[in-house]
Amino acid sequence: MLDKIGIAKRIAQEVKDGYYVNLGIGIPTLVANYVRDDIEVEFQSENGVLGMGPFPFEGEEDADLINAGKQTITTLPGASFFDSSMSFSMIRGQHVHLTILGAMEVSEEGDIANWKIPGKMVKGMGGAMDLVASAENIIVAMMHTNKAGESKLLKKCSLPLTGVGCVKKIVTNLAVIEITPEGFKLLERAPGISVEAIKKATEGTLIIEGDIPEMIL
Amino acid sequence: MINKKVADVTEAMAGVKDDMTFMLGGFGLCGIPENAINHLVKLNVKGLTCISNNAGVDDFGLGLLLHKRQIKKMISSYVGENDEFERQMLSGELDVELVPQGTLVERCRAAQSGFPAFFTPAGYGTEVAEGKEVREFDGKMYVLEHAFKADFAFVKAWKGDAAGNLVFKGTARNFNPAMCGAAKITVAEVEELVPVGSLDPNQIHIPGIFVQRIFEGKDYEKRIEQRTVIKK
Image 1: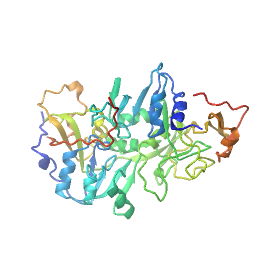
Image 2: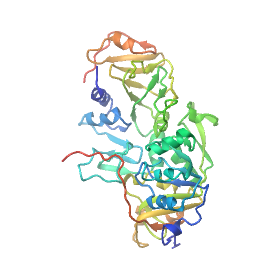
Image 3: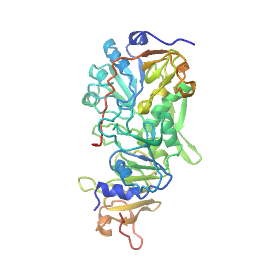
Image 4: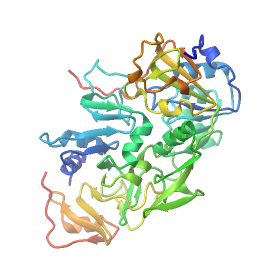
């Protein structure tokens, strides 16, 4: 079974040379640490920066330079700043190649729920609805099951949706799964995890064709 | 040169009344109009509708207005970084309209640009689209969203001049440019008011035409919400 870093490492393999990438809060943020260093990638933050670098050294933080999680950041050579309107032009206009975000639930039709639990405090969707409605390529990073052990890969989402039919791929602590018109297609298993275990943890239709390879991390 | 300079925050905010709708720039605590917010606290105007991406923290930013129950309604994309907000929202004292972030900024920009409404894919198929017109373009579904109407826009820039020209710094730009000229009166506060002619016209982010009043702000705290650093 993978931990959060394992999930981030596997997703990092999906990041290709020349990609502009938007990373969500949580596991997605970790992906930046594991992208191959022989390719050129730029990270976009929806609050108005392209070419985000690592966190600053102590004493070098700047209140005017943060990411979407409100954390202090740095920029890399070639970076640019822009306003929120232009930022979402990059997103809605499909200039960002890959969006990686977390989710509470994903359905076998690619619907995603990640912003609201009825009856609990609702903080808002931030930029998630714009991102999922627009991105050509969306990868979800999440645990396969919730804290109660219930599947997060469902036939239909039970929580209020963030977007419909938008998720392309899911990387969990157990598996890599592609969303196809027929349902969740199992592509890879996490090291030491059986197909049976993945089947058991998946409520939606799981398509298993031939031998399922183990992930190479 | 048309002079937009006013003496101070008091003059800049003349005409602010109860029950008005304001746009306030900023993302988190980054690039918020600190002087205008502090003055709204002092004026003690009530029943306000605030359009702002976030709602501050307990003791800073819009949290200060929430604390004094000056806000009737918040229109934001992400809120709840403060306990008082949560309490007022759950008790029903505070009305909250959550709007996808890209839609929020575009509803400002539409008001700035003379568009009454626009179609966006964000929120289609979700509760955000409930009761709204939807339409298909080239096989994809979109939701009709309307421009905001506001009485004042309070924005914050790094540098500006008496002509109202503005230059922003880093990610403190965020929502500020789209709010300029999107309300009946735009009030810009700047960290540094520089002599007219000293800003390079090639480097101006917002031309003065979108700004009605400008002043040099005082005592900027520029608080960091999530200080994240690497040890040297």
